[in-house]
Image (cartoon, rainbow, N blue to C red; front, side, top):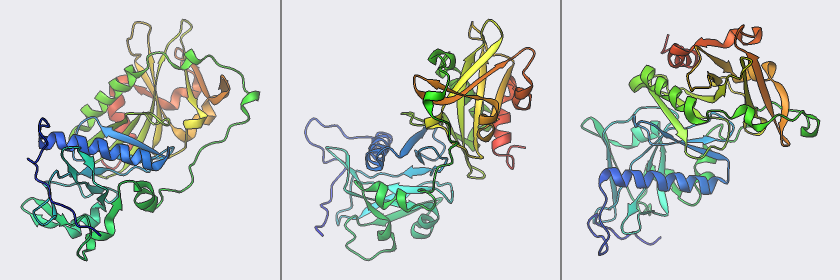
Length: 347
């Protein structure tokens, strides 16, 4: 294998400015996320935290909550002999997490053809203690026999050489099956799309206020299934997901929402949040937190232009009996979500 040529961080072509560490990190995260999505052929979602609490992105198997937190530590230069060195100041010891170490060199700032994708427990064994953090070193051409070499993967084959090898990544999806779409009653698309992102962003703010430094709230830049918010508890390292529906209350006091069958799945840690919203944008006093497994029993099967899904409809005042078990005061919704999803650490 040809040896890598060392590159200096200041060796930039004329007119091409260098990048700060923060800029390099952002570029590397975007390059990595793009490489994963291109390699995974539509089977992976990519969530980014709204606030950096130690992890940079979350690859997730579509229609599951098999998500793995990733800390990206990129370098834009190698040592004179071609050695890659990176220091990490702090690291959450999440047993399902990964440290990914790419080389992103100027002037193109593209991922090198190889990178390390190391499970955090293995990284803690491989890296050398360095003050309060860790120091990692290795060679991208694997010129020497080192334990870290087994975690070198091809940047064009991240799905095959990394994700597919994660235990459980390719297990079957738990999705309820609906009947044939032609037999389903048609429901207007507008019934489930009233205030869009409004409630989702409001709920994210409440979750961050309640969870503070212990809860990562992440969102997919491109929505590929029903998960609107991905939650990561940094104390238990559990992962949960929320499907958020902000629904207008019509003149008859009825709330409607709809969940597409094609994007929905069942998981103990997946919940649907229905946020009723009045016509002037004011949130109602009551929200609804529904485990995914209960959705089929409180909705009816419907079709939206041939697209089958779960249609929910209920009256607020008096509140429909079927919705009483799921009612939550709006003012405590964020704290209640965390208590339900992570009971061991938010009781």
